[in-house]
Amino acid sequence: MVLARLAETLTQSAEGISDRVTGALFEPVIRLGVTGLSRSGKTVFITSLIANLMDRGRMNQLSGVASGAITAAFLQPQPNDTVPRFDFETHLAALSGANPHWPTSTRRVSELRLSLRVQPSGILGAISGPRTVHLDIVDYPGEWLLDLALLDKDFATWSAETLARAEGREMAGPFLKKLAEIDASEKLDESAAQSISKVFTQYLNALRAAGFSDCTPGRFIMPGDLEGSPALTFAPMSAVERPKRRSLWREMERRFEAYKSKVVKPFFTTHFAGIDRQIVLVDVLGAIHDGPQAVEDLRATMADILGAFKTGKNGWLSSIMGKKVEKILFAATKADHIHHKQHANLNGIMDALVNDARRRADFSGAKTQSMSLASLRSTIEETHKHEGTPLDMVRGRLLDTDKEAAFYPGALPDDPHELLEPATSGATKWLNDDYQVMRFAPPDAKRRAGDGPAHIRLDQAAEFLFGDKLR
Ligand SMILES: Nc1nc2c(ncn2[C@@H]2O[C@H](COP(=O)(O)OP(=O)(O)OP(=O)(O)O)[C@@H](O)[C@H]2O)c(=O)[nH]1
Ligand SMILES: [Mg+2]
Image (cartoon, rainbow, N blue to C red):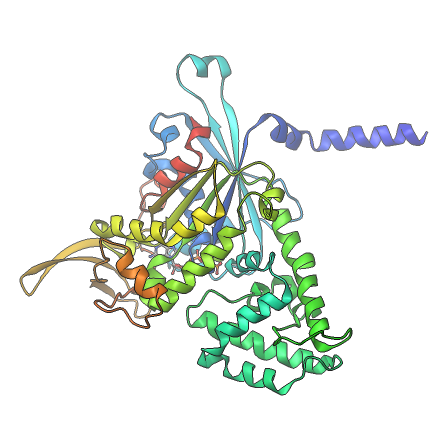
């Protein structure tokens, strides 16, 4: 009786999910990991990629588009019912509607599935017929990515590193003062724990506002559903020799470990499992604009994060990701801020910036490439004469004033080390040039039917990442 009922229930649920099972078993799924710090351009990239895969007029460098193999693209219910859907329509309307504006910072995780009908040409196509390929993408707040760097650190190490960096920074003043007032070897006092974690969070927010990326734990800045939760009431502590049980130090250590196991790991386990293609987005130009310290901070943070993707003995992340990531693209975003003649130099800087991390992370087996791109091209190029010399400029609508302006951002060096060396050796200002990056509003341009939003090299990025699956 019970068995019969059980069998019946199983059959019913199998019917209910048959579409999804078919999808999972017979239709290829590309899980694209979009990795990038806060403001690196993930949400804009995902929105523009989806829009350009649906309206493929600007995607000629994607071989399945050039050959005509991709015959249709449509959004599907996503495979994971418990994760909110990526709000593609709202983001696209923001970027390309009547009053174009950038989406706000992402506050929670969301997911989307785009399905593509592919009809290969030639004999193979005639035999195999059309097939459907699914592209699954997850968007999340960039701050959460920072927590990857915590996973292989214990509380003492994380505290020592965080405090060493804080020592030299003016904005850490109130936090360090508070820390000096408490004795972490004393018995835990909950109100002391709360107030120190509050000033620590204020310090992290100030760090982020100043353009620094080393702001762990990421949920302190972007708590998502954990707003106000006890999981977020800890802070780094100065070393204590043999801290006693129930001391403030031990309790902070316990909360740090709970944060890692109950918050960080479940997020990556759920959303990074099965990723087979990965794009790493980096706002290189933004960091150059913020100065050598921001570039060095970006380099070190990327090295830490990419280190978590390494295979081998400490490869926690690679073990949950299951199969190996086959392709990784490192992309410098927002390349429309500079004239295309400088893109090769931007590319070189991007390459050099993650070079160290790439070597350490040992992406053996994965095909990697660097490029510069713009997910949403917001400028046009112009050349003006300035004191007799031609200057390659970009023109766009400035975000702050809403006025159109042409603008020369400064020349990036041919040799990336001209930038990276001063950054690594602690310079506080660039020697030769000041690099300016204006913030442009999204373009207010009419699109032809069949065209997606204007971009730079988004089709080449797509070709590298998953072009092989769409031929
Ligand atoms: N000019 C230009 N600006 C861009 C482009 N992509 C992103 N931006 C700028 O970068 C900002 C951040 O982009 P998002 O896509 O929201 O960044 P994100 O990685 O999703 O950030 P979080 O949600 O905070 O993690 C935007 O508000 C734009 O100002 C681009 O292709 N061109
Ligand atoms: Mg976002």
